[in-house]
Image (tube, rainbow, N blue to C red; front, side, top):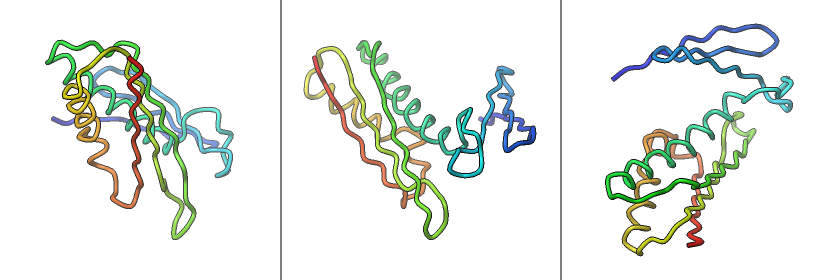
Length: 137
């Protein structure tokens, strides 16, 4: 399956990206530490966002198949950049809080789903990807 995203550079280090299937659009801006104003998600912020939402969605797919409820789950991704040898994402630290009561087997299955999300599997191996889970139920 393919999806087209149409991107237009709007000047001042900003782009508008339009999702082909839905027509929804988002804007990006360069971050303050890289000549931008930081008024919108930066491209690397979107990578962090993609990772967190992919993990949540993949876990929710497994939960839905198993009749489990993850509503209210919280995911926080902290992006850290490195400058050497080139400017890039160095680490994406993910913390997932899953409300509700789950058996140890269900927890393991959901954690495995997070680790197997397509974005996680697509990132370069040099990007560190620590993940912690919190099960307050």
